[in-house]
Length: 125
Image (cartoon, rainbow, N blue to C red):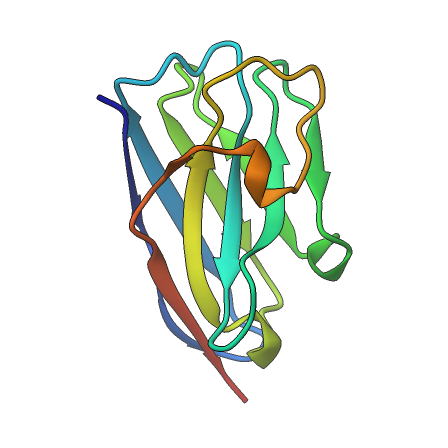
């Protein structure tokens, strides 16, 4: 059974940094896409950053240059380094993984079928 467990969320002031982690178990991460998504109150879940097992990445325009997605060598832990955080980044952040092979990792929610429980990120001005 696939389990994704996020950690690292918290409250920071604007301009601050956080690093999110996602521990994956029961998942064959060597061939598929993983990513980070977020959902703010009253808004739809949106893709933030995704990474392919070969290392290619894809970012939402709103976080380019501020967020960096990465994996450990064993591909069992996914990270999201967030810098220059803005109040607009406040949301529940979710780790996600896809159960089928994709040659290109998109930011579409529907391309991922395993989800963690989420970790809250709150950025104050």
